[in-house]
Length: 352
Image 1: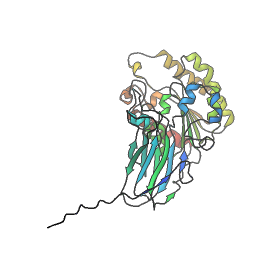
Image 2 (image 1 turned 60 degrees about the horizontal axis):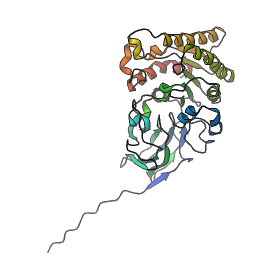
Image 3 (image 1 turned 60 degrees about the vertical axis):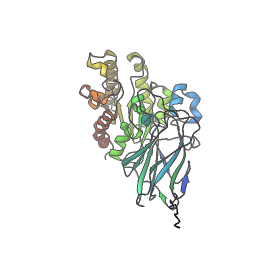
Image 4 (image 1 turned 120 degrees about the horizontal axis):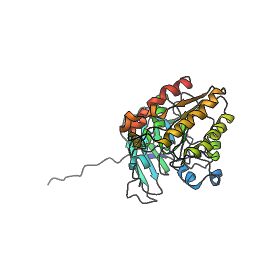
């Protein structure tokens, strides 16, 4: 009588979990990470009571934050926890809650919170496994519009972890602005215009965009100026209700940064095109554009050799309406156009 044995299925080898904070991985884009006790916040906890509540809430979204390392692991897995499910109308869950993995600059996958996600649930997502054991540069882009806890990064037990390659310049480019700066409405974190630009030029960056709240308050000017940057990009206007309200904050915001960093390049960006302008000129947007030009031109005429103006409509203008999601915010195509339009200017100003 024949005896049939069930085939043995090899179990996956156990992973070694790197937990944050860890000296094995590098955290970029979150300048206050260490003093915030490992929380993935974009502003310092010690000053949270000085910021308006909406700003502090948005600062807990780690847009622009990246985890970087080099490893020969044959696979990478991540464990995540979110405070709530994604629920934005104009952004896909991948864009709001996703954690993108790029290996050697190539996109490999996105871990997300599902629409029915229950707070407290641990999500475990494997980006790749059973690949050749060769060194790879790994970059994990953190969510654009929701807080997250990274509970662990799973690697082969035998894999080594080394520092990532250095950036082209040591200090980050610091962006301050509105929801467009924060990343609305990229399909995933690696497709914000700052992320695209940074990959093109091998730059570090800090994202201080605050959706609906890029109003140019002095507290945020001081936060921006406190970061030692290679470059500053100011892309705020539309969150101010009127040209008059913008006029009260724009020049003082710029002055705070320039006083702290007399020689650091600054780009000021006027508002990009909005779909409503296809019907008629928008007096408020035109007024904001002109105000920014006037403030910057006055400083340049007074001798500021490190300040330049970028017309937002040169980055995303009337002929590029397909680059918008909801008539206001760029999609991936729009962000690609914005990054392309900025790349030469930023590269030249940094001497790359």
